[in-house]
Every structure is written in structure tokens, then in C-alpha cells.
Image 1 (cartoon, helix red, strand yellow):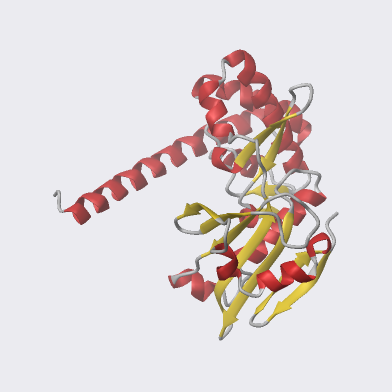
Image 2: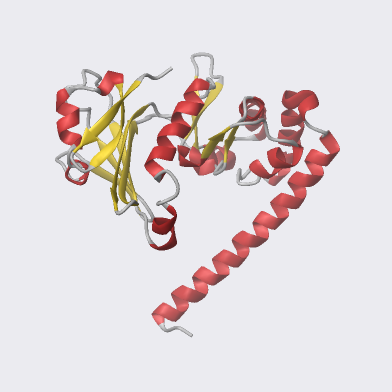
Length: 275
């Protein structure tokens, strides 16, 4: 359980974990854009959103590095922000829901948002940085089946357990799952991008199947993964319906990805005046 306190820093409002509610960190968070550009900051991603690695929190007494995610809100998304929480607030709530359910995620530190006229113009999410834990996507490609199979069985069991607790990660892709190894080599999983985590009623068979399609499970081991999920889920799913729904949703997802890729290539070609 992570205890938090409200944050009100000039135009920014949010929450901060009690363990980090110290004067130095509060002062740094008064200008999150400057914090992202501070000495020692490392840009990890600069695309739709910006992700920056930071050294240890000033004065927090906790030595680990941090990650600051700046969400960019444009167009219709900005209009929608008048009626819903910012992405940073959703990331905060999603991380707390995972922790509450006993699932691993980078420990949430704080979130901030700034609104103008009721609309979100800036929002930031700060969490502890997880190191020495590779993305599962690389392991999908690299591991031989003898090592991949127990990893997939553990992943299926973990996700089925999350679903049983009413937790659904709506962006459950292999880029959002990190793998840690225990002393005995057993895997555990760290879930990222928590702004799309939802906590509520347990999903039904069809929703569970759809939730798994973003995971790039190697085709040759997909049946094993689904069987492991069905075993872990028990009577909560209808096996034949689950398997059929997964195959249909997976095929639809693959078609959408193919169309998006073609459209991106066409846009790039037009931009470069190739066509």
C-alpha cells in the first residue's frame, strides 16, 4: 500500500508518495519541465510523449534513479481532458491499482497536472526507474523453447491473476512488460504504461481474450500460452470460446497493424515526394 499526500505547487496540482514528500523534491517539482532538462537527465524517449531518466530524487533519502514522463495533450485529446483525468493522473491511479493487487510496476512517486480553462495543458508522471529488467519482447525472440515455455506459463498465470482481481491493462504489449529473475531464476513481471490500467469488475471470457492480443507471443508457442492461461483462470473462462475469441481478435489486430503500417509508409512517401 502506497500512502500519498496532495501536491499543490503554483499552477500544478497532483499527489506525491509520502516516502518522497520532502522539501527538496517538492522544490524540484515546481518546474517539471526544468527538472526534465536538469544536469544528469537522460532522454529515453521523445515521441508522442517524452520520457526522461533522472538521477536519485533530491533529498529523498532513496538512492534509486527516477523516470519522468511528460504527456503531450493535443487536438481532440485536449478537449476530452475537460471531462476526464489527465494521463498522468490515470498513470498514477493505474500504478496504485497494480500495487494494491500485488502486481509489480515501477513504484509511483508523484503526478502533476496543469489546467487552463479546465483543459489539461501539461501533465507529468514520476516513478522509480526499474533497471536490469529486459523487455519481454526480446526474450520472445531470443529464448529457445525450453526456456521460453516456463516464461510464457508464468506470464499467463500472472495476467490471469490480474484479471481475477479486476485489473485490465489495456495496452498489454510486449514493450510494456519487463522481466525480473529471482534468485532461483523464476520470472516475475513489471508492467509499464499504467495510464491505461483499469480496475473494476472482473472481465468476462471475451474481454480477457481481447486483452491478450497485443502480446507478441511467438506463433509456435501461442497454443501453449493460451492453455496455460485457461488453466490459471479456471472456471472463470470458457476454454473453447476463449480460444476462438483470441484467434479472431488476434487476426483483426494483425490486419489493423498492417493497414496502419501501409498508411504510415504512404504518408512518409508523400512527405519525401517519392510518389
